[in-house]
Image 1: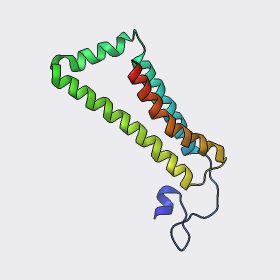
Image 2: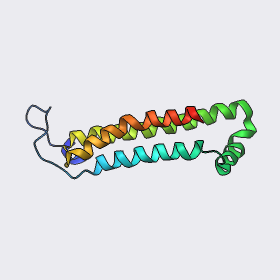
Image 3: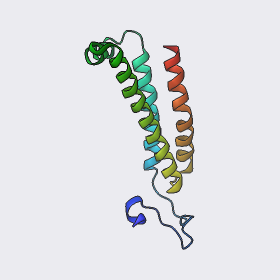
Image 4: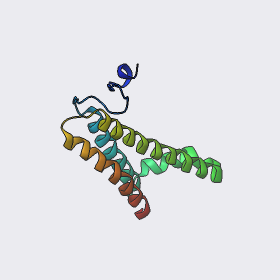
Length: 125
């Protein structure tokens, strides 16, 4: 059943995967999601983004403090969900033994660098 849903084949012991390679779909997904996270944070923190500020004011501004808390929770949840998606895609890329291996290494590097770069962008805003 696990083989059908995730595409992972396990040997008799059940811990290591059979030595076969797959296309780097999840590795590329992790790299793209990392780039999307950093570019979205950069766009949000860029000065003069009137559309984003108007959206925040229209949706959250009428609730004052509760709106600020809701905005913080919503954007924090979106950030954690995106970082989680990147981490899960990277781990599954390693488990699936995707080839070429440099894509999996690039996905791992982007998984580590993207949240740090995003937080630094938010601090500098």
